[in-house]
Length: 311
Length: 282
Image 1: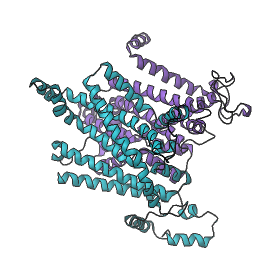
Image 2: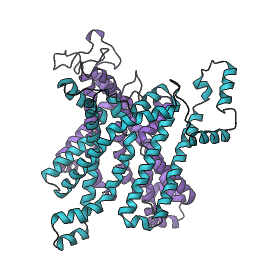
Image 3: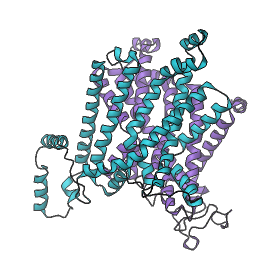
Image 4: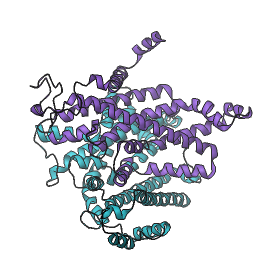
């Protein structure tokens, strides 16, 4: 188990390193930062001074090491808009994002998994058809369309809920509903297909033949075995707690990390984009690592081998 | 052949029939956009700004109404369908080419080349594409060719994984070694023998990528970071229509419903194709 986790951890660190190098390379590919941040017609001595401060006059590998060192120290540069620390701005936006993504995550699981199990148990009945049609619809409805339709219905027509902003508790409702619907649909589809796969297995038939009640067969034998793909999807969604609401936050003018990132991209505020990118990467990687650990816990087959990979 | 197609058609599920009809319709609209559009998509009619669709107190000159500059929504919709489908098609092809090439390379060379490609696959799969796209757009700015190229990186890792797995399996099978034994160079074996054998899985995977690229493109364009005005795309129309959700909801509802019906139809038809064509993905 320890070996397995160690291999996973190494892979995660490698991914993190790749993302950091990726941002560095792309930053350098886009041209001289001095030209972009000052303006092309800035006086030459100002440009030289800027280069010296940021170490742009040194060889590329030294710049890369310096860049890494800055990141290790937690120095991500300052926003070009207002001179605040880039990471500070990003971290400030995190609570707002979590305020809508965490409730949505819980709701997705509470709705999606039972719906999938139900559909699988009553395969080809009207329940299955109804649930799966809803799931396909929820999955293919892009979140910005869904969000705007909800605004049109509940804010414009009925006037029950505010359309966007963040001043009252009522403001969280529509973003959470929007996030929940698509996620629950995806989970329901995955749960259904992995349940169906498991229900056809010999050990389930054996359990039924042994005279266990239906409930026991489902809860003890089928669900744990159907759990792996479900954990994978749920894990991906957990990694998306920070990054998964980019579009929804923008639909509802919600002051989270997604909205910050989109406006930073619009302004080409590179330091903020970079800080957000790294934070999101760390979140995704930690979630993946957690999923791998859970795999190891619930499935003895995984921790046995040398971290054998699916091909 | 045609008679068989008609016979089969009757046995297709109703939803699949509807899906196929819709996709064909959208394709026809995209191809003949210029002859269908009643106006050019940028032409202004300032006297008829925000005029509602013909069936709600609007006039017949603008069937689906007009937007805030008096541009005909129907004409813009038709051009947007063309732009969005073009981007999605080009990106899907690029993604398939990248994925299949890297998949073949990793299956052929094994060793460190394979490991390197697998690390790239992991890297791509571990970060949401939306975030990568945002970062690249922030760093490089936006232009249509760059945007299509960027979308072309969507989904390559899935394609590479599938290709690698299937190619490894194919290399184990008799036909590949037989052709090798006849003295064919690897390129010939892969292009003439392995690729045709694994093509159905790749095509099915492309039917997955295509609607996802439409959604991604419209999402980014909705955020104002994708297709830039004066060019128009479905997401772009929704993004601008959003300002008028209260006074002129038709500006936003027209493109939204096209996006929803199209991705819905492609998913339904794709799922059904997958069940029929490809036993490995079941």
